[in-house]
Amino acid sequence: MQTKKYTMTVFGCQMNERDAETIRGFLDELGYEEIDDVTVADLVIMNTCAVREKAEAKVFGRIGRLGPLKKKRPEMMIAICGCMVQQEAVATQIKKTYPFVDLLFGTHNLAAFPELLQKAAQSKEPVLDLWSEAGEVVEGLPVTRTDGVKAWVNITYGCNNFCSYCIVPYVRGRERSRKPADILREASELAQRGYIEVTLLGQNVNSYGKDLEETVDFADLLARVDQETGVKRIRFMTSHPRDLTEKLAFTMAKGKNICEHLHLPVQAGSNRILNSMNRGYTREHYVDLVEMLRRYLPHCALTTDIIVGFPGETEDDFADTLALVDSVSYDAAFTFLYSQRSGTPAAKMPNQVVGEIKKERFQRLHTLQNKHSLRHNKALVGQTLEVLVEGPSKTDATVLTGRTRGSKTVNFTGENIATGTLVMVEITEARTWSLLGRTNLEKTNTDDEAI
Ligand code: SAH
Ligand code: SF4
Ligand code: F3S
Image 1 (tube, rainbow, N blue to C red):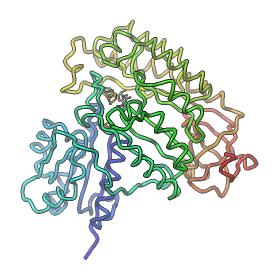
Image 2: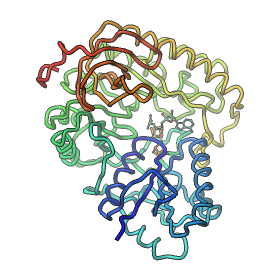
Image 3: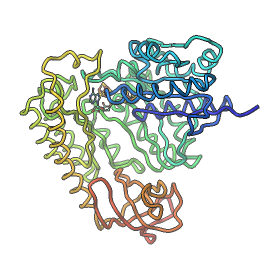
Image 4: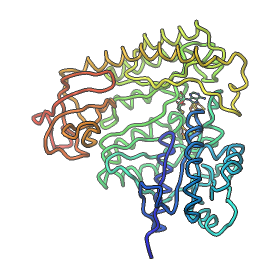
């Protein structure tokens, strides 16, 4: 019998990427092979994201383009899953607009994927299966990781924060923590199999453990991953400022393999907007946190997320965001135009900001942030930093690319260096979004303890 083939497109965040690895795991067990060419695939999967309108529009466009292919090859199955589908209204709309889709399922019933696939294969009608509740954390699902060096490990699922603009709590359910023993086992196995970097994933890692019987918080977990698993580089995301503790900064400072990088989304610089966003902290509290963090970790890279044009944002509010970005001086900021998400409180707020104003503010923020990114990068010129090699650069195969512990991309020259190696690289030049360098083999020590 011929091996069945599938293609998968993944939209959205690392949670979705990690879920896709579980789907790959299931399909491996079923004997499927992953390919790129959609025109010969037996199964086409799209794992979707609902966080902004643009993400959703892309998915609608892609499904539409599958129509003619399905007409030509009716035996080709199409499955759409993930955060978009978890919204019942959107799932119903996809089903109605694209009746040729064979299977629709949400984020809560991922573990049932093999049964759903079988059901859809046997059914003449499209199968739509959504669970309104997330249920208990399911351990032991298969996983096929696409990267052999860096891995994601979930520590919490879902979110309880209900920031007023955000769809995530509605499509990922309430927050559930995995047990420390399960996380530690997974991280240790990854280290044993040669993975160098592990990123602990949660929508708000700082509230880890609140729902567990065991008394454990995120700082405790992080310290144990550092001490007990053998993972050489530990990252985590995302940290919500409201729940960030001094204990975490202390744990990061004391840690051996915890990377000196914190992603701490601020979202806005005006207290009025932060309140309306339901973020649960003030600008002053946020600035205090940054000061505290820099006391413990003076060289920690700091990155953030910012939304521009939240409903009611005035020029004064936006000026507060610019002033905050200028004073905190981030290494990088992910900036987004506010997108109305139906079902969230902010979508119904008055004074939605018009597109033109949003775009103009976005540009100003971008220009300011670029100045700070370049300033931080320039300060690294002349230093020798540890870089995890990711492989040849996409634009120039003679150049290698990798990341520092502070999560900066470095393009560098060096010979006979394999992907997955930790090398010392001397930084020779700074760009806004990357660094240039050359390997410093004298300082590259193969003795783990010395790195
Ligand atoms: N849990 C993480 C982030 C989840 S979504 C956190 O709390 O930081 C990633 C980012 O998308 C958010 O930080 C926010 O900046 C942005 N985002 C979420 N909803 C949005 C919306 N409706 N419009 C624009 N940006 C949004
Ligand atoms: Fe969305 Fe806020 Fe939860 Fe992040 S913390 S996922 S922004 S609701
Ligand atoms: Fe992630 Fe998008 Fe879902 S950001 S949690 S894939 S809505």
